[in-house]
Figure: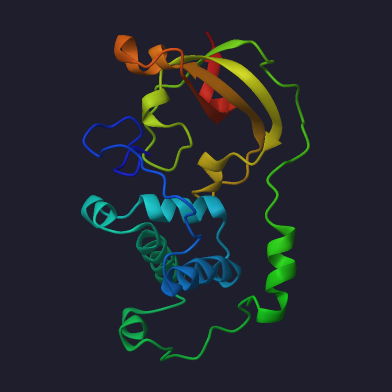
Length: 219
């Protein structure tokens, strides 16, 4: 999905400045926004990929004028509303106005540690051999899907080299739109800076991207 979030290599935003000893959260509300997003996946029934897609789908103006966790909060609000789990009136009131839906799975406080400990593994058994091996040269798709994709805009139609084979994983592009897990081989692909940015690139730097087999063809 080519939206404002896909800004890798875009000029005008300045350099990425690292904050020394950066805390995980800069304010208490950020911690709560993070927790609410994770906890809401249980009653909402959405995946991490759907959650990412919700954040990427925010209007450009809202996205660019929001902080990192403001984007997270806006994304989870949209997901909750889309599932009928919260209304605009309840958001304005700051509390529930309707009885909870029956049969909704709820993440209870006592189950949080165990649930987070299990995580959400995405690796799946292979049903076919890998198409590519370490050292193979590949070219990425030029597709611009209207939905979520893990292939960044700056790396589309570019030649790279298979650096690592991660195994078979849930294909995020399809899982994000509830089209099934469609597990596929996942690779780490190395792109030389000159291939991505042209003759003005800072040699000999490179960019590594984790990309699924449907993103790739032999070069």
